[in-house]
View 1 (cartoon, rainbow, N blue to C red):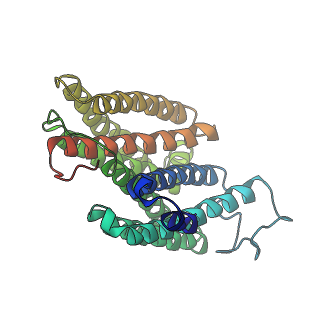
View 2: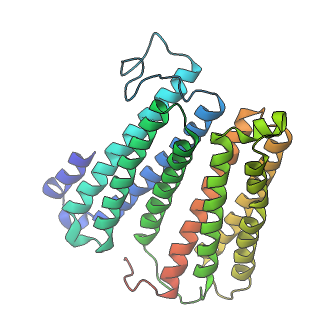
Length: 308
């Protein structure tokens, strides 16, 4: 993929090739792969498949453990496969950002390098997750790093999006920034609940209920921050259509997330697809808020460089 894109500059018409557009598409694909990775990771956890491959980085000492393959092994193996793909794409991202450095905004190369560092760190955490037998703090950090990579990729994509600032966003970027922090923290609490199996122990043995209660209480500030953002966005005259759509989408995802969370809680986490969808919807909500924050900052003019 990287080789073909680099050769395009040599064999094609350079005047028609847009490195910003190509890199933006690359970033969107990485972000989608990361979202899928988190969903598969959630499925791996709820299906008790985290140690289905007892070694790392191979699985039963093989690249493809065909003889041991079952649903649990497949989930863990495919999770690692998707992670490897993201790792290769992160290397490609830095390569492309280096190659086209003079045609890109100055922040792109350093942000791409940060993504590569975090992906490598994420891989190390993934290995420790297996070798340390699913230690809860490592599992939670594993999720937190994946969410951070996802957010940075979306921020990069929105920063490279062609956009003409209208100057109507006002202070909305501050509201969305607070919402990002709240939802990210709530996502980490949810990851902690899952990694410690706190809900199961609270339901069955009345243990670790403080972790579950912290996640339940976290619903209120996280939800309030999203609702306030949406209210102020709706009350902002002449707000850009993309920002207004993202505000609507954030509210829709919040409602979906609350429904999925309540259903998961009342069913005592016995329906695995609900738990996976709950985590995926939370990541999508966080990503939407990040996109809104970056675009509203550009609209406000905090970034003087408008990509055209």
